[in-house]
Amino acid sequence: MEKKNIQQELKNNTYPGRGIILGKSADGKNAVIAYFIMGRSENSRNRVFVEDGAGIKTQAFDPAKLVDPSLIIYSPIRVLGQTTVVTNGDQTDTVYEFLQQGKSFEESLRTRTFEPDAPNYTPRISGVVELEGGLQYKLSILKSANGNPDSVQRFFYEYSAPENGVGHFIHTYQCDGNPIPSFEGEPEVVEIEGDIDAFTNNLWNSLNEDNKVSLFTRFIDVESGAIQTRIVNKNQ
Image (cartoon, rainbow, N blue to C red):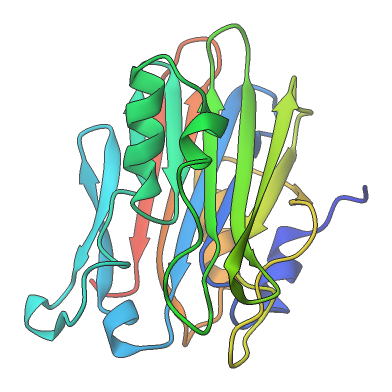
């Protein structure tokens, strides 16, 4: 599969929704994680990422404007030992708890489905990065079958010994619309370039100015486990 330029992919899509990128830095030294959120409604745009221990959580920028927290307030990132969990909803906690019990990423997500936000039925996208025994990562998407709320489709993708400078990108929506069409196909293969600051700036500057809300990036040194993290919020 041809590698895509992540900046062009984002610039050409006004509304990919929420997105996860997992991969390996160009110098081969770091596991790479990125998670961004976008929003069309005032409630969705009224959010920021804040650090929460080794992970992050979303919170209302202006608590007085918060309407319904059920699908917008959650922990996108949680860390369990050498494993980092990243998702677009409260299934982060489901994955984390299953892993704690010695169960698998796949088992945890078989207990979950897409979001109950008719008529969009937003997919739940999830990822896990594991450093024990060498870098490997997984991605998943849980989605409705062509907008049918009675039919759920669960897809899982596993990547071992990833290539330098290569990442895999999955997002909730194909593009803007009403209802918004769900992501289709396999995770996109994208180039990962530069250090964490260049990577972060390139992503943030490529997201649609009107719809972007927050971005989290993390580089994890594969040998030492040292972590570098960046958080960018439109609401400061």
